[in-house]
Length: 603
Image (tube, rainbow, N blue to C red; front, side):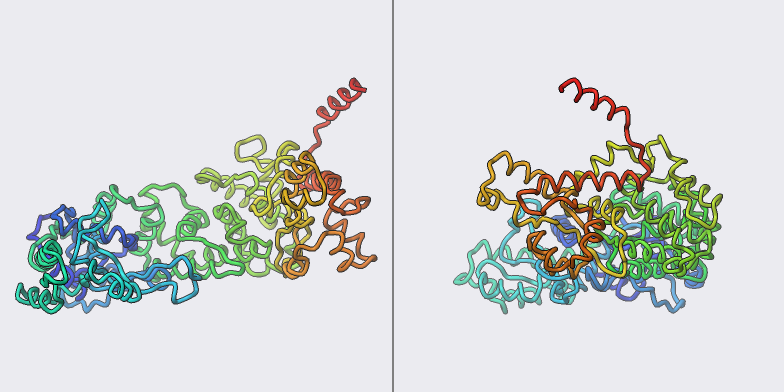
């Protein structure tokens, strides 16, 4: 590895534009935000060091041995986050960036491209949410930010017009990338003259000096000075380059587990472009109704688990043999993951209620190991599998089994599933982990705690999901049986309740004893109608008994607000009894005996 003669930023930008500088597949994607880019430009203007770069010299005859990508020409938070494959002629040598991609991409976006990030007030699907922004520098004054001397900002056309119309005496925004088109000081002076930046009738002497000095400094730093210092690695051995890459990326923003795995997979897969395939797969899973939010981390972890490889983070696990095994099994792995998410979507889960995405991996392993495909979603033959998977998933999520780093779980889950082919091994898994810190079992105290779960939480949804035999062809909402609007201090005082009763009502109305799952259309119809009134309007007398059984509504309660406390406590008991039955919880008879004895003493 040799230290090479430095080059200017302008030369580097030209090399990027002409694809002389390219990105190897082992590079992660661009992750810097606009603030980081602005501070990089400020550092350059202030003569702060921006560290050295590491390039890999790849001979033209060897370019087809590896996968390379172009630098991002622009960044769009929704539509343009992935690099395009490089278009190489294989007629000349190239330099692939091993260290410095974030800095070089930032320079390229600031000087040649644009950056579009989402505005808070718009919907994600709206194109107006992502205005294109170019990098500008204010020539009239320094930054008000204490961390920066120069006022660099990514500004949209709308914002630029606002500054011109309202703050022309304080701001003069110069598009930073235009400096690359200047050929000397004469053009700089022409710019200053054309825009009256030396006019003492419009600007103070400090502003005039600042404008002249800033523009000259900008030209010098980005056109003339050779600020890109770099080492050049000339080895053609991928293993050596890979180890260098890992070593130089061990500081700063570390490569994540998935960044490294995806990089190596992309470099070593033979017939598929791992980066493109996995990114598209992530997008396709997230589009499954009602919507999920998986990332490449989950997919790559699933690859290791479903391919029966070691799941831990070790460089040895990223061997070409393992990567080829994953590539060869990708179709069956991706199918299993996709169907798993379709299945849990049919249970009513979405991005908000699926609290641990890793819990999907054992389900996918079960499907792949058995060769099950779409038939598991609807076939009567798989009714028991669906029931077992749903119960296991809810148990695992409620018990937070997959919180933290669950790597130690996967080998055992794989073994149990492999030993019990055909039917999802719910009972075997419950038995296997009973008494451990990854237990899927419940006791009476845990059930009591669950019944205090509050409205809107994912756990409330899970408990209700267990309690209700849902038809998952419909969407269901969590809903207050006695409407929320009646449970305010003002509303309860108006009824005539004293402070003690108000406190009792307020402590209960938002918990499971007053919550139900109801079809989306019914919930919209119900709105804030009092419970007794809504039932009398919508549920016929013949259906009322079944409806009350389905929703755990006490038969002898008149459902008025005056009877809410009795309604709540009785319904809570009914729900507890059902949960204990569903989760196979033994009642604590010893506690019951002690309570009975205590009550006898009192009497």
